[in-house]
Each structure stands twice: as C-alpha cells, then as structure tokens.
Image 1 (tube, rainbow, N blue to C red):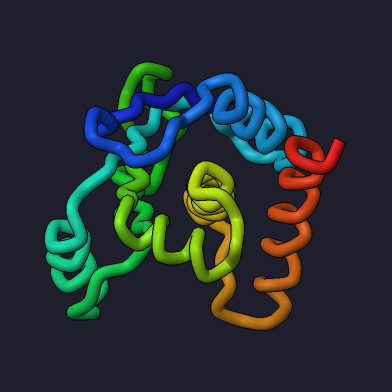
Image 2: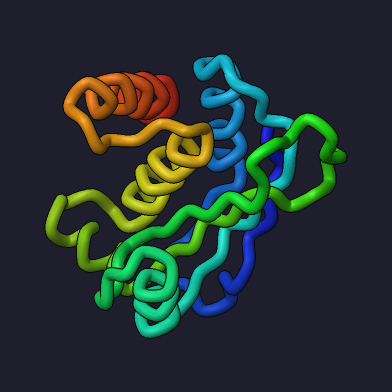
Amino acid sequence: MFKYNLINTDNLEFNIDKKILDEIFNNINNTVDKDQNWMLNIIFLSPVEVQNLNKDYRNIDKTTDVLSFHYFDDFSNLEADIIVWEIILNQEKIIKQWQEYQLWSEKEFYKLVIHSVLHILWYDHEENSDYEIMKKFEEKIWELIFEK
C-alpha cells in the first residue's frame, strides 16, 4: 500500500480525515493489482502555481483541479521510502467543483485522490475503453468507502 505525505494543508478550507484517506489507499491496494509499495506526496498549491505546472508540463495555460506526476519509469530497484509520485491539488478549484457537483468539499478531494492514484497506477481516460476501466475502479472504490 502507498504511504503518503500531506503538504501545505495549513490553510485548507476543509478538513481531511486521515482515516478516510487511509481507507482510500487500502481499498485501492486491495482492488487494483499493481505494486503500490512506495511513497507519494499530496500537495496543495495555489491556482497560479498549479497553472504554471500545467503550462510547463502539459502545455495547457490554465489552472486545473489536480495534476499527477511520477518521477521514475522503473520502480523495481527503488526503496519503499523514496517519493516516486506527487499529486498536486488546487483547493480553490476543488471548492468550485464541490459547489458545482453538490458534494461537500472533502468528498470532492477524496474523489480527486482516487482518480489521481489510478492515474499514477497507469490508468487513463484518453480512449473510451480506458475510460470505462478507470471509471469502474473509481466507482468500486467510492462505493466501498462512502456507500456502505
């Protein structure tokens, strides 16, 4: 199971329940049959910082809710405490989406974490068939946690 660090959470306008976050990682570990033995950072940045990263790494000059980065192509010789991924989140965008989708902000955050970790595990949604696979994992993990 992934270990994680939460970074830049001092000024969040919502609470993160570490028990729920741990449950997300546990359920992803039990649901997705891919190695998940390393460390990742979950980092909150300003909209401008997220926009700059989006522009620099994706050539998209606008802010977004979340970016996921992996730092190695081969994980076979890495020790478990090495940070191999980062999830960059934009609190402002999360709150706007929370209002739009009528979830409470923490649930929007958890939804983005699930989505991002699946990206980190090499799932994407570029093609419809890939989208369907990723969506099934997202829904299953969500149900295990929030629809008991």
